[in-house]
Length: 275
Figure (tube, helix red, strand yellow):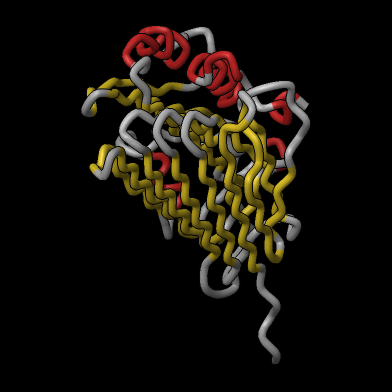
């Protein structure tokens, strides 16, 4: 049997400050990776990432590189939730590289990744920040869709983050689950039975001031789910780390949306999140 055709996509975007606002300087897209720029009145520049393959499965490869110039600002999101389907062989892989120059800011705010049963997926996120650059980074994952009667029982999922500022590693984490996804997520030390999880990291001198408002959202007893938020000083800046767990994607978004609005300041939510 001939080998099945696999997805291969690569997208790169470089933006910089010019004429008092952030403007596109370079755009490259190859294969299934497409980038669109909605019209905005001012900063930040908004970019929408699209995987025209409609999802990922074993053997697929997708890569994104975003560079933000000095004093520029960009908000990056996706057209829709990324779906990771059952893998017959190998695993799907996504790599993301974010680089921000002095005085720049990036908000990496993709919509949720949906992991289907027997999927195999690895995601790598590498962030390089200049000494006084800022970043808001989000990844949210749904292990199935309860409303559709779907649940990720078996498979493998690996999420790897490395964040450097001024050449120093300031945040690193590896989240790996599988092959028995459902049983692992049931454990109290893992997700306590949650099927929807999200991690947000804010690197900014303002991060400490936002800790208590963030905790009020994360720990709101009137909203389903649970989680936590913490702050650590890193050099001349600081980082706020928040984690959310919920029974499904709807309950996750009930807290995720106001939390993103809080941490992203005046830029608020990407337009596509409200459609």
